[in-house]
Image 1 (cartoon, helix red, strand yellow):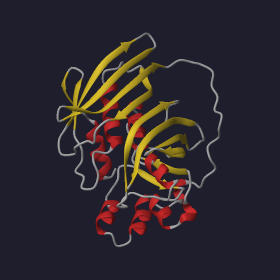
Image 2 (cartoon, rainbow, N blue to C red; image 1 turned 90 degrees about the vertical axis):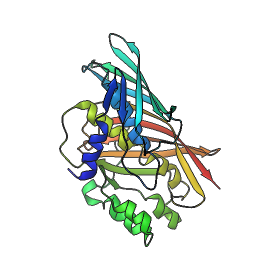
Image 3 (tube, rainbow, N blue to C red; image 1 turned 135 degrees about the vertical axis):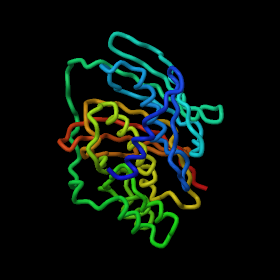
Image 4 (cartoon, rainbow, N blue to C red; image 1 turned 120 degrees about the horizontal axis):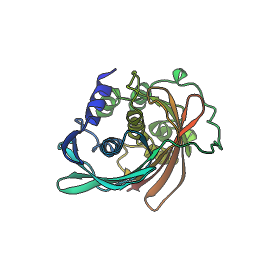
Length: 288
């Protein structure tokens, strides 16, 4: 287990400071604000700690309201909206400087039998082991830019292997521009069997590449002086159990952008081709 994954697991071990009130911290970061996937993952941990263990989260709906400050802790207030016979609903508000920076509603469900189908097969893509690491491709993309090369080279908790072009590559080569973005990911260590932990780690990873998918459709990339953006809202549906320490294919597309906003959606498949998670996000994209 690398140091970045150890730190992430530590960040997800929230401090309980009162009934239904939890506190989390952020890693030191020089380039970006608090990562949205971190806030979503920590909020889901807070919600999950107030739910009976026989119920697993099946959906979450979240809004990113204000940028997070990595220099101070984040307080998560959990509201017990409903405790029914089959479903449990929680609302979480993340607070910094006395103001909400993030809100999330999450629904948990007991395990029940039912009809099952999967309409679309997993895309036919190269195996993850045949693809270069994210770090190696980023280092090549940034050339002599010292600050970004330092950011690209640092250890990461999740191993991403891109099938599609990186936005920085498409920025240089218009032939790589695409509305589709496929990437494999996994956490490269044997993790505990706690099902909530694997869901939380998928939520963390889900926010890495969705805005990139919108940028990829336009041949734009972070770091350009005229491009800024952020996640606005985020929704996830968890369909079946999976492990985040096994490879998952994150098949994404951007069906629309306009009015300084862009929409991206994704599907996470297990390596055996089973659809495990569906994701939709709207993001802010401003071009000056």
